[in-house]
Image 1 (cartoon, rainbow, N blue to C red):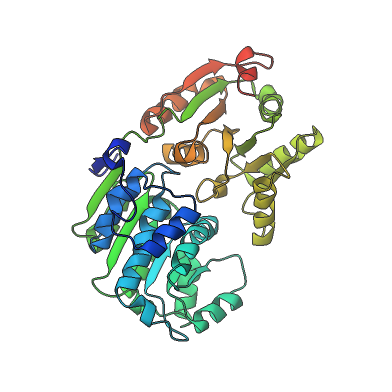
Image 2: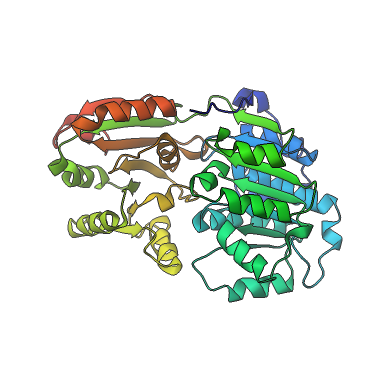
Length: 401
């Protein structure tokens, strides 16, 4: 097993009293961040922003919800402005910055954060993702854009069709770099990076940045600054991890009991079919629920997610398509109806709660025969969890709702 890359650690105490202006960001960007609710820098932001502004290649590791999007998005905008970005807004101009993400949900989530920051200084962003017609994306490129947020597949498609020229890309960000490699995007990412401007700046951010991305680092980031956030791992006090050992026949009744409450809950399943089945069973039990998985087209996925964000339903049942890039305020309970097979999936699922210092609970349901595998997975993820034999009616279930 490859060891994690060694990083410079930053704690919350290290950045106490530091402002975004202190880090080198301009007043317009500071104001935009304040409107986004970013009052002061989180540790990952304070650690990485100065190095990004200095033009260095950066590897940033911080737990999901620690503020990585602002950590790369805000200085990226500042750099474009510092290098004449405000004077190069001609019709049909090609992008000078690229943010790559493994899923369309994450790409759109990134855009929701970066767009207002860019807009504050007169720059424009756009998303290039699959699952939607390419026509509107081509039209946006023809009008001109400064920052592209994209998934690798659709970006390569448009590049092959000569709708986008990557040769002027000066700054490239890989968000969730390890997950892109896990999904088989290593070679497309390498091809894309080779098509960007020679000597351009590269930034890699992830919650689980390890040597799985070694080939990208070796080729494109010869001397990166490596940062992580100390004290913000998944076992921190903001998230309470519990494993309930149950009989298979009790799974759905236990889930129904746990989600029958006022708060927002995200339930993870292994398959699309089970996500639909479980959402339907919860609805039949009088619990407002909806689903999110790969069999749904983009409009359905967006609509179902909005039902949770607006409070029309309290439960979203999802496959791992939702494990990365889905941000919904105030999800305080994550239930893993099907335990994950590897620790990275556990980390990113559980990262949907306890975000930005808020508290949350992660409950994983397993059969008795999976205890050893679960223990190994938790050790790999460096998670301390309470493992409890559970039956419907046990008092510890009531303590969660």
